[in-house]
Image (cartoon, rainbow, N blue to C red; front, side, top):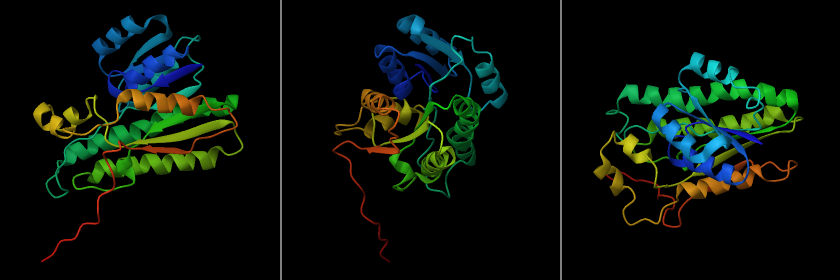
Length: 248
């Protein structure tokens, strides 16, 4: 099986690449950082194919995929993992360009690469698209504004893909993690302020990237008659916030 994982240079993507290869599969790992792709490729060997592009660059994305060698071009699983959160400011203080980048990556980039890959899956009448969403797409929180909205898109897009693909053997799964540490996520969100990022996880027994990798592998390894529509997972230490009241 050939698995393409976007955003494979760190966090969930890197761990998924390791886990799928350990299970005997071939992995196309995509990312923007050539040095990280080389390091991971050197570690994982011939079952890993590094593919350098940015999902927000549509021409570069399409070119990279179309130029895959024939031995790597028959993609069985697409894991749409590339994504990011930027900032935690309330809506009236947020940087619009942070919003634009999140939309370009988490929505437009994901949709574009899906459109390229899914057509071939339908022609073959087999394949699996796994989207990495977030509990932020279901449960709003202060400062989550556009990030949460992008993940709500991922959730609804996944369901609509299922609706469109009824009658084919192409499967679609949305994975919605809660608080997960051991990644660059909060470091990116707080623009390199690692002290601020570390406070997010302080005292919490958080989800780890390997938990997400195991979850995705489990979904993909189900019999082809089964589609796992949605998986929502949180650390035991995390739950749902109470409805907020502002008393005047």
